[in-house]
Amino acid sequence: MSQKITGVKGMNDLLPGEIEIWHHVERQARETFRRFGYQEIRTPIVEDTALFVRSVGEATDMVGKEMYTFRDKGDRSLTLRPEGTAPAVRAYIEHAIAQKEPVTHWFYIGPMFRYERMKTGRYRQFWQIGAEAIGVKEPAQEVELIDLVRQFLESLPLSGVMLNLNSLGDDQCRPKYIEALVGYFRAHEAELCADCRDRLNRNPLRILDCKNERCQQLAAASPSVLDSLCDPCRAHFDEVKRQLELLEIRYVVNPRIVRGIDYYTRTAFEFVAEHPALGTASTVGGGGRYDKLVKELGGPDVPAVGFGLGLDRLVLLLKESGRSFATHPLLFVATAEEGARDHALKLVSNLRRKGIAVETDPRGGSLKSQMKRADKSAATYTLVLGGNEVQTGTAKLKPMAGGEPVTVTLDDTLADQLKKLSPDA
RNA sequence: GCGAUCAUAGCUCAAUCGGUAGAGCACCGGACUGUGGCUCCGGGGGUUAGCGGUUCAAGCCCGCUUGAUCGCCCCA
Image (cartoon, rainbow, N blue to C red; front, side):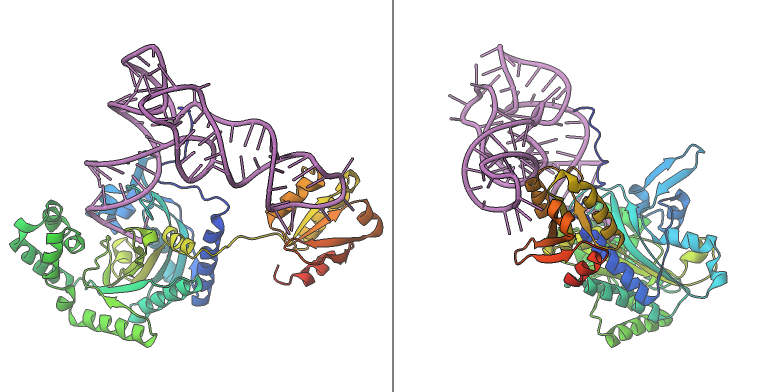
């Protein structure tokens, strides 16, 4: 047992029984993105470490202590991506997408990696559904993305998710705000927790996020970002709010949302679900505008907005609904006599080619044991193939949930007969 | 990174004072020889997470490791 190899800590296997719910969420996501005109991208799981250091920010927890970083055989420093925006922007720049189209709408679904302590809803490999809209400076862009998330959540369906909204200002007004904030906290430095005293120098915005009681009190009385927005930022924020109201999207302005990433400018938002199933991991998604990031990473000076949703957390919430997403075969084929095996083999193959979900037990065995497997498969009908059926060219379909058997003919029209019986399948 | 709790069959859990590891569910088979579920009967399953220590004797006591759960931190 000491030699037993197990999965890596914090990285989970997804097995049948659970995977169906993931498929459901991913299917609804893809369908929503289709309606909004967003196209899928797939970027590598591994990137140059510098990409995240330069975009997410050196002083963030994500970069400072949560990255899976290693050296490859060429002595390059590589990192398992902790988030999806930086890789998307890297790809956008690398493929000179700005030269080809003024507006880019992308989405992605894939695993992210952060070296963190595990708890409910937080894993070292977790999955994100994200979107990036590059090239639009207008407030309508973040409103479109927020509307997209809303419609996606409705499709699952998932309710009770609150939208928290904030504006972090831009490079005109943010420096002044941070100056005011630092000045304020400097005056109360002795009262701050040890972490926050450190944050004061490295990343003062994060103090607003601190859960320490005294820090919270101080933060509550601190200058609000919203009071120091410059006129263009204020107008932008007001317009975002106006359009959200136009679409009847409910939100709460929360000036304490700062997000754990440095690249956000102006609008920042979070989707929060207070639910016991999530424990303290109540954030199911977050995003915001990052108008300077593309240029900072060496690309053109284009504005952008994006969001990321925690697929694992959505699945946790959806599991609570108790809904079943399992799929079942329409037909199970059992054989009653050894001589019918070859006929069954061909029958099953032909039905499958015609699109019918058919299961059988390749091991054969007694009819009784095959019937048990038919029951287990949750097939709608079972067809027992034996000498009689082969001889007469007809068979009875047994409805496994009860009811009268249905007689079918064993010819090329069998698939159509089955489809007629069960149009949904 | 810090703190707390926990680890027995595939799953949920028993096992008295330290004295031969058990049940339910699940799985397989039979009762019922071409018809599942219900009932009854039987069967396979365990280095008690791993390694070491104390003891005549350890699932139980002690140490370490690994893993899980929760809180802090932070986030999806």
